[in-house]
Each structure stands twice: as structure tokens, then as C-alpha cells.
Image 1 (spheres, one colour):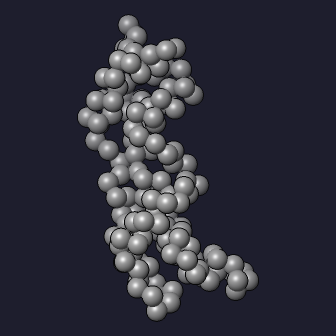
Image 2 (spheres, rainbow, N blue to C red):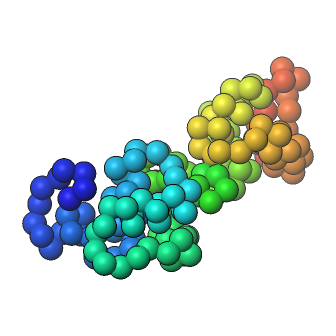
Image 3 (cartoon, rainbow, N blue to C red):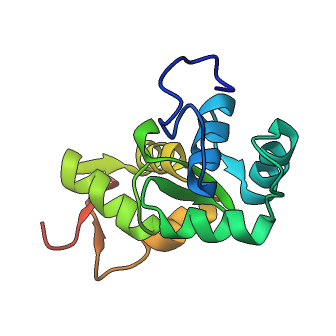
Amino acid sequence: NILGEWGLIDWNVIMPKRMSDKIYLILKQEKKPLHYIEVAKLINDAVFDKKVAQPATVHNELIMDKKYILVGRGIYGLEEWGYMAGTVTEIIEAILKASGSMQKDDLIQKVLEQRMVRKTTIILSLSNKEKFSKLPTGEFQLANA
């Protein structure tokens, strides 16, 4: 395949037939999250077959399949790379559930590892008093903890 991997010709990772298979191989080859328009361009450049990959088709596949995670505006990565599905608020909740409480800067850094968003987006999510509370030490924790 385009990654130099060997296998049986009827394996989807060797001879991709569906658009989702092609998207997976492109993302795996690039080893980083990509915008769906860039994914479509790379699929067309790779010439898997005579079919032309349209950006809208690629975007629909990325939305439907849970192995692709939206990490930024139109930018998708693979779940196998460690990205979590969900909104910024849900990501913060998962991080705090795993670690208990965290300093603001550490928490922001952990969220930025999962999402390509501005720091102000994270800070805005942290201001949700129903979900998060700030301790006297300056650390944040889940409001119901």
C-alpha cells in the first residue's frame, strides 16, 4: 500500500475500496491531524483509483466514523493516536475525573494536547460553575467532587 506495508490484496488497508479506508491510510501516512480538504487533496494525489475524492464526501465519512476525532475546525485525527471524542467541556471533565484537581495552566496544556483551540475557549469552559469549581489553592476540580 502507500505506506509500504504488505498484505493480502483483499485487505482494506492494502487495497482500499471505501473512502473511509483511503482517509485512514492518508492520516496514518501523514502521522498528524489534517483538515478534511487537505485529506481529499492527498487522496486524489495518491491516485488509489480513478475516483475523485470530493471534500464534502471526505467530510461526511470523517463525521460518520468514530475512529476519526474532530480536534479543530475541520481538522481530524485518529482515535488510535489518543484523541478523545467530545466537546472542550467534556475533555476537561474527563481530565479532571482522571486526575482529581489541577492547576489552570496544567489543565489548559492537557486540553491543548487533545484539541486545537484557543486558550480563551478553555478558560471560557472552565467558567461553567455548574461543572467546575476553583479551589482556594487555585486548582480546578469537578463541581460535584
